Image (cartoon, rainbow, N blue to C red; front, side, top):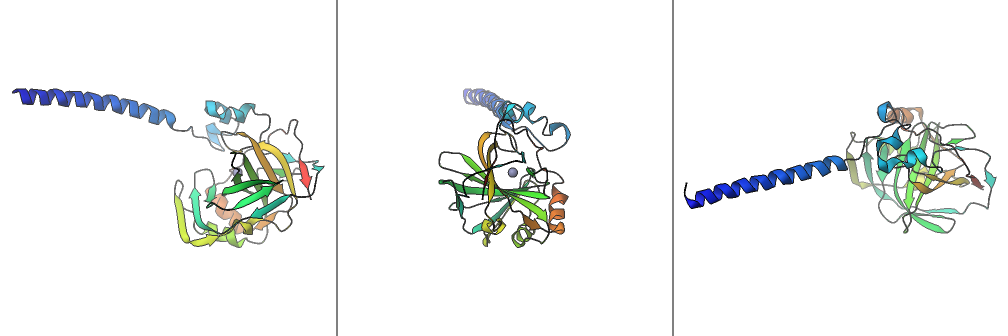
Length: 258
Ligand SMILES: [Zn+2]
């Protein structure tokens, strides 16, 4: 073995060692960084969420959790909610927990003078919130965030009745679990998912999925919209149940804005 070959062999060995060490370092954090799986049934069901990760402890110990049963609201000042929604290219994600539609920048809601940008909307079945002990077939969540990072969710109850044309359009394009379907030339407007009566309940709560972070402004319309039995069935064929059970209201009050 001449010098060159020996050096080459040494080099190869040290490269291999570096590669192995790198691989070990790379694999471990990748595995560790994988977020824990949570679900609505089985061993990772909502009663276990708080134990699945140190990041999910609010799911177990939070005192301002969502959803809640909306009851005995306090009549507050008239509704101060206004929408400035614009059309967005249809982009649907089937994320393994729900069907979600992502929204392009530029659509906003103003709640009590605070402006929030619409990020996405998604669906739950049955409804997560109840109103006077009554659940709806489904619930729509329009998720917004302001510049300070505060989240505001607008909730719409979906009862069985007439079919909703926009939901019909979305349902036609649902991709497989884990996939995204984007149809750039198909514009949709979330305005078509809002009831005509803008009276709403408001309270302070949390995300209804892990990590169950609190400080979320909840705004739920009194008036439901309708979806057909067939539209409900299309969703429940993919997600039979994707609703967190009711959480205690504790010291919170629900306001009603007419
Ligand atoms: Zn939701």
